[in-house]
Image 1 (tube, protein in one colour):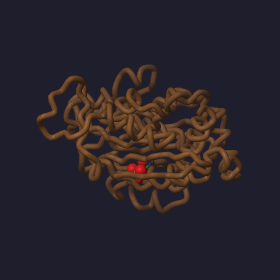
Image 2 (cartoon, rainbow, N blue to C red):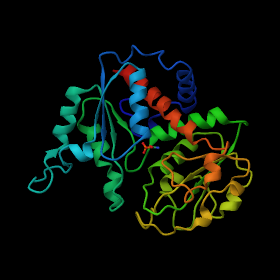
Image 3 (cartoon, helix red, strand yellow):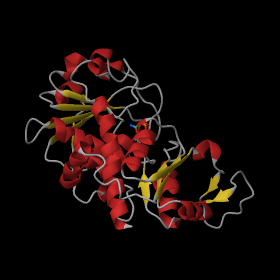
Image 4 (cartoon, helix red, strand yellow):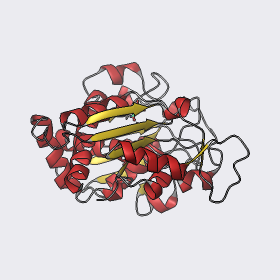
Length: 312
Ligand code: CP
């Protein structure tokens, strides 16, 4: 693996999940692997879990960590080829990516979708720009279209809580006041397609995800029907993909409640809007896995960094 950019870079999901669970039992077993190596974490957007879990994972592997809030502190980057840079951008990604490569052995990047221009978002100019021009491995810490470290943590959490060989897992849309990207849902769908599970996606009409990703998945617009006999319910908001970046509904009938959840385990990547996405009773009850998911972000990052370090 040269870079870790999408769920498809996971060479074997079951092997990586088992290895991550083993790392969780003994997090410092490879603490010499990153000695005298450096990872640079570049954030173009806010974070709590990704920033701290990736830093912790790196430290447990013995890496030195440099963090920069690039969105506020870095120069405005230019991505276009041959652009006359007489407008707002100060530095081209060609130089920026090569310069970061002089200071670090791995670079990890968070750069969300702008949700204004689908084509631009899908070009993934920040993460793909770094992958193109950096001379070191690039890790996706959530890009416009994917959040593979989250999906890997979710796979670890599913494995730790599975009570049957082929569980029913439901991905349910829920309302949110703001337009949110598709990245978490996209990567969760990609990851679930690698699992032996009865997987169902439920959302109001108009909230279809990219059909290329959901091809072959069961989609049910009746949330109650989708939730029948579920073992795990992963709740997430995303904005419309067809009417790109628009909020078409804030219908709180889609909010997850204890009644709807039944006996299923509740999952969400966090941060979560209480009593909008999910009612308090679910988050505060013992069927919620959200904190375990957040903890597993350390071990999803650690397994990815370990694989990259072994390849250096
Ligand atoms: N789930 C997740 O990526 O959390 P942060 O946005 O806080 O990093």
